[in-house]
Image (tube, rainbow, N blue to C red):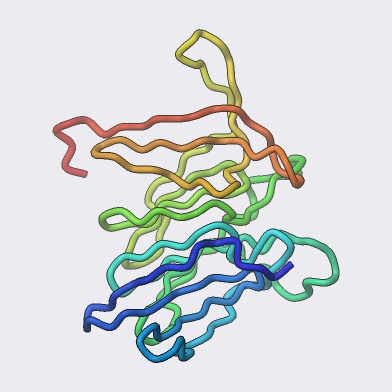
Length: 212
């Protein structure tokens, strides 16, 4: 199961070079030259890979930086090696890893269907990248260092607008966080393929006068 679940990205480096970027469920990332018949520029094995990624549903680009959320969900002995669940930042011109931040392994604490991998697509914003994990946490990583600067647990109970209770779960599937102005929208719950179910659409906003 080493298909490409994530969409390819056409990026332009600071030097004006077009590069096609592709992430595979094998845990590998490829950079291709679209102006030279798809010539391979570099190829990097970042994660172990697995039946649900490796790179699962989507990477993000900010300038010369490619953000690679890594799932590395365990699918059995066909995918041996060390899992690398977390967020990678890769230098697009060279293919070198700028930083890697592993998802903490003390969040699940034996909770059924909880997993540290990042399955959903990541979203790049000014100064950070935001990625959702199958442990239910949505985290923002500092652009320069990879330090987690914001962490939200969505796998909890919520009071909804219609007066009912709903619960979050794993942040998986194809959709990642969506930003519009000062607002962020994220759906929580991915109740298939051995993940935590949930049924909420969450909206968060910054105050209009926020400078942070």
